[in-house]
Image (cartoon, rainbow, N blue to C red; front, side, top):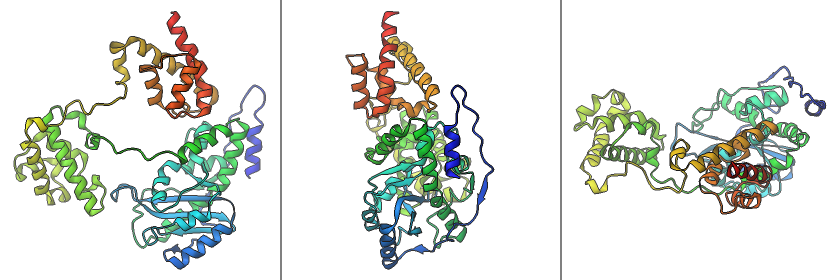
Amino acid sequence: MHSEVADDARDTGDDVTPTPVVPDVVPLVEPADGVPHVVDTPEELARVVAAFGAGTGPVAVDAERASGYRYGQRTYLVQLRREGAGTALIDPVALPDLSALSEALVGVEWVLHAASQDLPGLTEQGMRPTRIFDTELGARLLGMERVGLAAVVADALGLGLAKEHSAVDWSTRPLPQEWLRYAALDVEVLVPLREVLAERLAVAGKAEWAAQEFEAVRTAPTPPPRVDPWRRVSGLHQVKDARRLAVVRELWLTRDQNARQRDISPGRVLPDAAIVAAAQALPRSVPQLTALPAFSGKGTRRRATLWQQAIDRGLALPDAELPSVRGPRSDAPPPPRAWADKDPAAAARLAAARDVVAELSATHDVPAENLLQPDLLRRLCWAPPARLDAAGIAEFLAAGAAREWQVGLLAERLATAFAGLSRS
């Protein structure tokens, strides 16, 4: 099946690329080896480590979290599959240190889908790959319109992968059998999927692009903590003055502390809409607070005193301690819509650069955001280097963590575009 798909990818003709034929999707309902039990003892883990260390070829790796249910992005199930070892489902709550498994796989390529989502949690368990293949990133570089695992598997392998359990509460114990079946099937398809995508990338001349992208994901540094994370409350734009912003901040901080202590997703403790509603209304008592529709639910009413205390703290703050309406200072460029007034030359550079990126995106069938990080493109146009020739632009992009293949595609083209602006 894999070779037939790859042959179809090669047979594109000289001038016309045919519309790809998606094979009839065959539903995947049962793992090839059945549903394995969950490994949750040191003795069982030792056997898994030995089996996977003796296996051959790449290892498929996946991780399940409880996003929307628990606080943070902790991993609650780790799935692996490798030729000669079969499939393993591991409980990282019972076995938080999986470094021995990682050490047994040094030098082995790990195949993941959307690796940037799973690697931080796996790192907390001591699992650090030395090489990866990201099937989601590979699909993006191939210009696939839908890059979720089920869609890519259907396109590349002709298999139907059910995803109805993707957003369940994986912190549940014991895990239901149907969820475990889903988890085992996820890793069962990853290595065959990698084979097809790798061949398609090679045929398209994008294998090296993919290798650079995968390495960038693998080695990506941990992002620094956000400044004023409370400013990410949904609907904050409705709050117009500093006093009300102080109430938002106090409610957010109180919610975050409570959610962390209870290990519950903050949005389940108090929705963003309730925070904004309270900041707009500025209730002075618990009865006034619970009269708001956003606080009519049993969960929010139960802790109404806690929320009113937070509101009172915001109301009592001295003016000198109120948060800035404009937010913290940032070295990021202003919103592009303001460029024409603030710096017409920068606005012209951005328009020209976006045209270049759009043309290359269409030519190479790669999403614009994968050709170059939009923030880096804006920074180049807003505060360009002293030299706007190809060498100067290449140095700027490389310093901003653009990959070699991106620099190679863009530097010369952007320099030409910018030079045309100076002549006009």
